[in-house]
Image 1: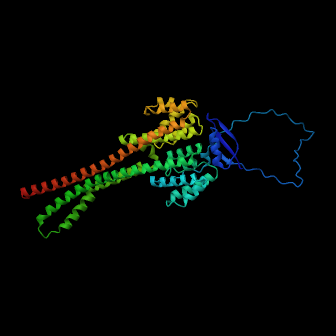
Image 2: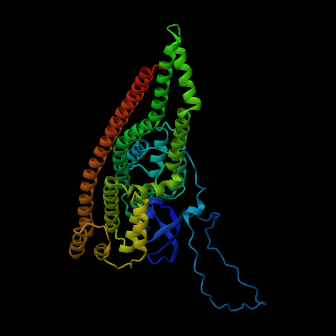
Image 3: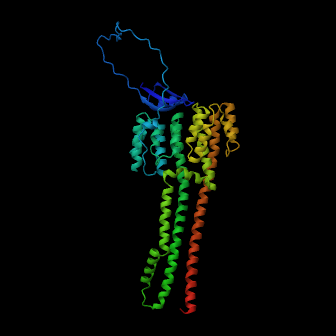
Length: 442
């Protein structure tokens, strides 16, 4: 069985080093996690090569010359080893095109299936990379497979690709690695991506309707001016080429009139939308989501569901409350809520009961803390956390349905109001102009 040399930190943050025999690096990380250690680096120890001897005689240790006295050396305490971060050994961050929820759902679903069947993580990643059409995801999976084969955790390999894997996904994978429930963690992420894709489709329709509504206003006004110009062309006689007049006036409106300003505003909105959706503004987007009524309810319910499931897995693996809280907070999909939970975890002690913290946290359902407290009294904290996660999961589904219905209603109302408004604007603007021109005899 191969031997691995590791550098880790204990629950108090103190550096710990040592050697461990394990079947592979992932199993070694799991064993260390069961002991409450957080692995920073782990490499396979290479045994020293020994030249064989025909007589197999014991090795003689050379003695110092008799003429030179051996100085007595007082033993000195060994300096405390400095913790070495795995991230420093990894290549730098790789920026790629963003992956959408559908692509992430496919990747995590297939990885969960492969690893659950007993396939090693690096083999699962290698197998997955040939099935992906997107070049940037395919290259990322192959690079991750090489990192995992070298003994690095999958979560650290994923962290190199922030445009493909969200921080919450990375945190959930780390929870799965530490708790020995990696397939379950991957399946949880896949389920999150499935729900996010369903919700995103509804709001994608809303954004399309909104953009079309904004662009239709200058186009409608340009059409109104064009119709007035065609009415004026009637005075020139029946031989007038009305089509040419319409084309010339519409071109003028779109290049020099209000249509041009509408086109410029559309370009500015498109650039702002692309910038807002960049990875660097992920925290700002997640903070803004908490300001929307239906989105806020769903975001809180989803975050607390994921947080409770992560706590359940880590508690089942024997992690103390503070370490479990901090690791579970990183797996929360909403970055704003994740940061708030992480700051709360930094103030905890290792023996602080989870129920005590939940009683004092604002925004937590009033039944959550008593459920967890009963789990602490009965010795079944994971079971209590499972109940909490199921409760928040039901709330996430209901609030998600309301959010999708609200998006559809807003899209329909916006389309109706915009269409009707433009129709009456053009109709009234044109006919009032035509009547005035006719009545005044101009």
